[in-house]
Image (cartoon, rainbow, N blue to C red; front, side, top):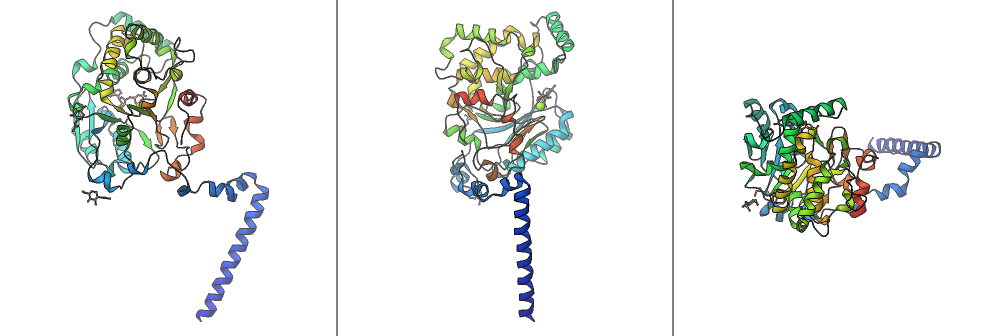
Length: 385
Ligand SMILES: Nc1nc2c(ncn2[C@@H]2O[C@H](COP(=O)(O)OP(=O)(O)O)[C@@H](O)[C@H]2O)c(=O)[nH]1
Ligand SMILES: *[C@@H]1O[C@H](CO)[C@@H](O)[C@H](O)[C@H]1NC(C)=O
Ligand SMILES: *[C@@H]1O[C@H](CO)[C@@H](O)[C@H](O)[C@H]1NC(C)=O
Ligand SMILES: [Mg+2]
């Protein structure tokens, strides 16, 4: 009986094998793309364990050495409104699943209004470690009295006419100014050096089984990003002139190994609008707390461009980090697959996509988009994947 079954099985397996080989040959000849995707050369080129990652093994979890003693002085930070509850919960849940369940870094949520019980309950339910909810002090959020409201109104009306995104919004301007110069002064954040900024409704497409904070600490980084792009000129027409006035006054703050080659195509005369997309940031708050950045932010704030124009925290952070830090202190995370509508960064470096089990399509990564500033970044910091 059993011999007969073996024979039947063997014959069956052989038949299936022959059919597959036949199909493969036919497809390879008739479909060029199929042939390329399955050729032996290509398959072996993609074997994940033969490739390297840009993050050394020691930062990966589980690693007894990391697990036992080392933790970064870090928090995960989200600014949100009560109306963001559903999207906030989704972002938190995703980052917990992909990263924080293995690390249990504390979360901090900030809002200029008290968080609702519903927000706190829903968010706490999906968090593995400690969580705190903070109220933003009035003066850190709202438009200061010394802003000329007539001028600010005229600026907003012009931007509405010109159909600039968020052009008519005061609350958006409050948010940009807060993110530029205030969040790291909040009392709940004083006890931390590092933060990871997360927004409602973002997506993490890969497992993040390494500790990005410790990597930054050990490698003397201060700022990091996943996506870089051009800013809308109409939101910052006088920003660069203001920056130049500041650096003329305080040349001692500008790093001799800065990222001007990323920010400007003509040695600093004009801004090329490149910036790190700040809805994702892993960075040092001590860098923002430094004398250089503090004086820089105050100088920009006094110029009033957060309200007369619509200066974003992304160009402000990018210019601050780009000028006051060394370029090697700014890190690009190829291996963090990240999406904020409408753009996605998907890992492209050797083995990063496989190692992170990424769900995104690397071909459609924003890095390759004409609107990406990756070329400008790689001009000063060639890609090492
Ligand atoms: N508490 C609070 N958070 C805000 C407000 N406006 C925006 N945010 C938060 O600030 C971040 C950026 O806002 P978002 O609407 O996503 O701007 P976009 O990403 O530039 O389109 C998100 O984390 C929002 O939840 C606001 O008026 N109050
Ligand atoms: C990490 O630490 C926890 C608590 O100390 C322990 O239970 C767990 O087994 C450790 N995991 C690894 C991989 O070392
Ligand atoms: C964490 O960093 C903050 C800001 O630099 C500092 O005040 C605090 O003492 C640090 N905590 C630890 C445990 O090192
Ligand atoms: Mg957003």
